[in-house]
Image (spheres, rainbow, N blue to C red):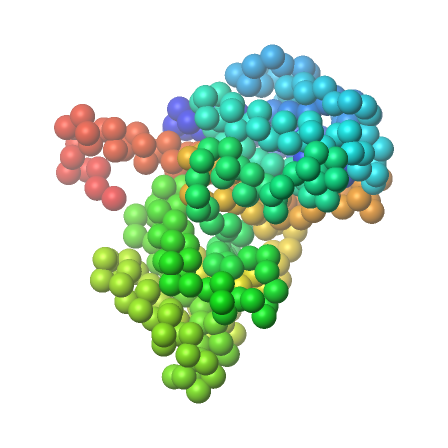
Length: 347
């Protein structure tokens, strides 16, 4: 049975209207039909001409829209869109749509947010967007200081501790605090949003062979191991630090629920190799669920009708699964707090 949270629709933001966002939204609705309720926030003029849609006034109305039509919560933009050519006058509304989706999910009118790709340079040029991307903007909107980026597919979940910085800057950015906060948020997210009572974390070393006892670097000995020991003492199940080159084959992946990696490519190369089209980008540490397809605006193919909606479909499905897990966990704790079924409600 679906929980009350998962019975609400997912809010899908339009993203950059000159990119592939509008066409993969239409394609996702055509593929999913009644399987998964979601609504698109944006300007209907930006949708493909072949897209059948119904305008709605409130998210709840998306549940009554026919499966072969896209529910659209309209958000007028300054002008139509030209595929492949971002317009500065669209930037403010792209940002406003994201904020509108957050408002709806925080009010309980949507169960999650799925964000279509944005073009950060277009937002900066057109509206002075001061954030590196979606993640930081979403955190700011709800006053959260620290969030975690996870990339996930059915075979693997990865979390980088440091993200979009040069490799040469990674050792300085890799602090004990950053590692510990990342691991705590990941652990909590796996419990809350994936329904794992006792998550198993595998932690990669920074250096080749995880430092090889200090022969190839001391970050493992001086920084990583003390953090892992402290968290193990609290009861977390942690493997590592492990050599990154032996962590991602099928046998190794079966032993953990998420891999904590020290830098961007250490995390993203394995998941994109395993499932390039179906990977999902999600944010842990927010007070709501947020997923996103793991690709960009693809201006070079926008408007040609060849964009692959696989990652968006995976992101929508993952958002629904996370809403079910979060709703079930909330219901279970409420059941325990009522004094009923206490012996059946343990994590």
